[in-house]
Image 1: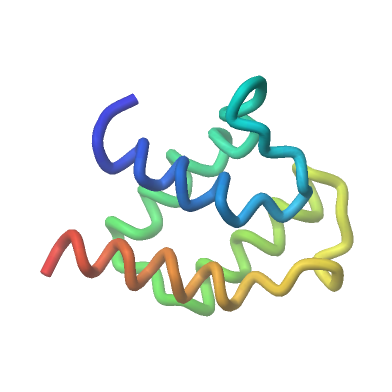
Image 2: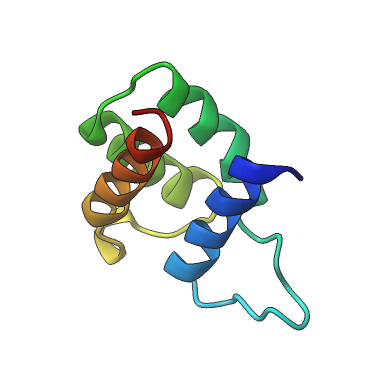
Length: 87
């Protein structure tokens, strides 16, 4: 995994909304989000739509209630991170 994808992986692992990240044994739990997020961010998807995407993944993929995770701060962080690399 190269450059920006690694950075995105690090951001997602730091967020660790399901509390499973352990750098010694589990670094790829959120890799399923990397490509779809990269595609959305590259297309200029706004923060609200990124948050809605994350809500959907939390519900559909991870099986949690989106009410348990506030995705807006992470969506803001991801869009700011993306823009800082493409300014």
